[in-house]
Length: 466
Image (cartoon, rainbow, N blue to C red; front, top):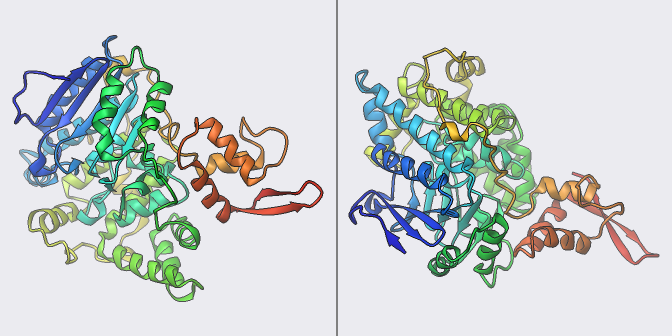
């Protein structure tokens, strides 16, 4: 695979081989954290590749132990605090969000290799890709509430589409998922051992006029041979508790449910989880928690572009520092001073002091197209009529899909009720024999279904009850 003429120390490198074009984030000592220079290198090349007939597949990787650990928020806040350089901070977010949209909407298969730390801005580059590869090295998080900010880069779009309230939980707590759990919860579409990635990239490069189905099948060929049982702890009774606690539209109600679970749940693991989650949320910025929850709820009914524009409005409010200085405070303490075990001096200090009306007025204003208060996103003209692919198409079946199949409203349901094995066979057929389908379905069915015994037929029919 050939590289372009950029020197080895270039912050972004570009590689060409066969039908494959790959960008390589190359700031390993900084965990490939994005800055303006990287975005300015990346966009013209991605736009060029997107419009070239010879390019069949675009891929993104990172050198070192990270794909991308986020954006350079220390530089952003430094710019934001100075009125003379505030526009630089806003331009960074505008450039970043436009880049995220281009990658999600370009009319070619896009493979994001999440082989390492994938957080914040790194999630934006990857999580709406048609193909997202997790490895044993993957660590995924949206850690923004730790620093007095809000999950962005399209998080309100993709977190609101993850099964149940997993996305709400990740967005508010800043907790991480690791390895195969990233795949199990739909944030990755495939799980491939890290050692197999180079060979996979070579095979993709050898394709001729590749289709999405061909790329999917090729990645699946390189999957872990022993994918086995689910690894995520967020299953069973704990998952039921999580969905119940994080279903609310007010942060105060989430806190109240967690408090109740920590004392009254019949399951010790749930009581421990609820206490730990409460402790975690109390460390986060109250303003950030309320902004994040509102954004995720609104993102459910937004397009990706609408979600990104909403998040740009939010970023603008945080950068200006008039509504809240928690972004300044969080970055100073957590990122610059690295005081990660102490609670920054959030103002206000509790969620009860942050009114919902204030959040809506300050971070979710009703802006007209002509309003210059916040920058506007301007995707390239050639993407004007683009449609963003459902990011779950090539992953494991979602709970919503499984529910529709059991209830008979899925296009592949047929006219009869199903047994567990019949349900698994249907989705294995839809997903082309994808590894992990049975394990995912069995976990969902245990939580969401009961069975009705048919002694005459010798079968147990599934009934969706939750």
